[in-house]
Structure formats: structure tokens, C-alpha cells
Length: 301
Image (cartoon, rainbow, N blue to C red):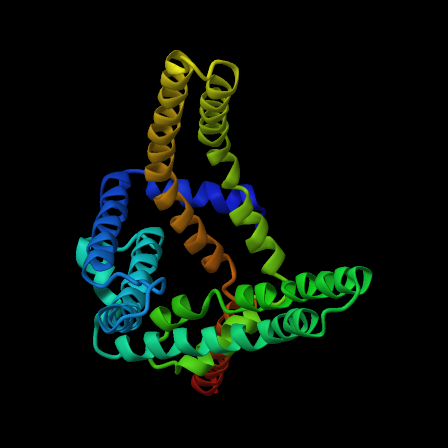
């Protein structure tokens, strides 16, 4: 299996010469998501008919627009990694005939299965609250749900390749894509987790700068509550700098991350399939050679 560095190197190589459209698609995705949130915002803080309708609309938008849009966004970077001709239209490919309903249904199935694996942790947590056990017993019973939450996370990683498989195999059903994803991710979940974790370092610098700015503001109010202006101003500058650096990092990191995920998927292509194809080709070759040899023998006779 390829190491993480090689997977990321291949992603960067695929992005070479395509950074413009890769970043453009990411920014377009941000704009569309922002517009969708404005059209149908989710608000569960207040109970009213208007908010209920808006919340219901938000759920519908998520299911019928956001899910295929996010899937198409991921497919774009798979196409980029595969060296296909690129256009912004590829971002909306999951809305196409044969994909749209299947992608939505696959997402719903994955959500249901992950939710089922979450239930034991939720039920134990509820049990602790209802029974009002002693502090020691409650502590132990609260640790158990935290441990059990690892299960749905592991399962979620098992299903991560479902939508790439649907793109590569349009005739594959949603359920078969989920099962195949589970099979090819067997023993590879930690590798994907570590691959994703390797991107966190990029966010450390803006995070540290932002925290330092926040600390400067807090210190300005604590040490000189009468005139905190200078410290407050410097703190705001640091937070603004952190935000700016964070945005630059995100603009670079998002296409890089998505292409790396696509690179990881291509690394998962089962060797058995390749071997099988070679064997079939070799069998055909042997059969063809045998026929030629027989014809030659007959001619010689």
C-alpha cells in the first residue's frame, strides 16, 4: 500500500496546472452553500409556524440540493486526479440522470447505519441521566458512551468510498456501493484517518495567531480596564491576521485535501481485479498461440 506522502505527492502532481479551476470550484461551492443557507436557514431555537416551515425547507434543501452538490464537488476532484478534461459543469454531475436519486438514497442509508451504531452510546448516556447514579458510577458509565462513539466513527470511515464507487460504476446500486466501500476499506480506515489528520498542521499557525490575539484582548481588559485600547487594538489586529491567513490556507488546502482523498480512493483499487484481467488476457493469448501452433502443424503435415 502506498504511504501517505506518496498519496499526497500524487495529488499535488495532479493539481499542477489546474490550481486555477480547482480553487475556483471550491470558491463557487462556498458561494452556493452561502446562498442556500440564506434561502432556507435552519432555526430550531424558537417555536413558530414560520420557523418550522423554514426548518422543513432547510431539510429538503439539504437532501435534494446539498447532498448531490457535495457529491458532485468531490467527483470534480476525482476527475481532476484522473486527468479528465475539466469544466465547472462536472461539479454538478451528481444531478445527472442515473445518479441523482441514487446518491441521495445512498447518503440516507449511510446516515441511518451510522445513526444505528451511535444508539448504544446515546442510550447509555440517557440511562445515566434518568437513573441519577452516584458520581463514581456515572463517571464510569459516561466513559463507556465515549468509547462506544468510536464505533460509528469507524463505520463512517468504512462507507467513505461509497460515492466514488457510484461515479465509477453507474449501474451499481446504492446498497452495493456501500457494501463494496466497506470491503475495500477493510484495514484501511486508520490509513485514511491519518491521511486526513496530516492536514491539521496547516491550521496550527492561524489558530496560534488567533489565540494570541484573543489573549492580548483579555489581558488588556484585565490589566488596564480603564484604558484597554492599545492592547485591544493589537489583539484585534492579530485576530484579523489569523483570519486572513486561515482563509489563504483554506483556499489552498481545500482542493489539495479533496484531490488527496481522490488519490486515496484510486490507491484502493483492488489488485485482484487487475490480476484477474491479466490472467484473462494471458489465457486468451495462450489459447490464441495454441490455435496458431495447431494450424502450423497441420500445414507442415
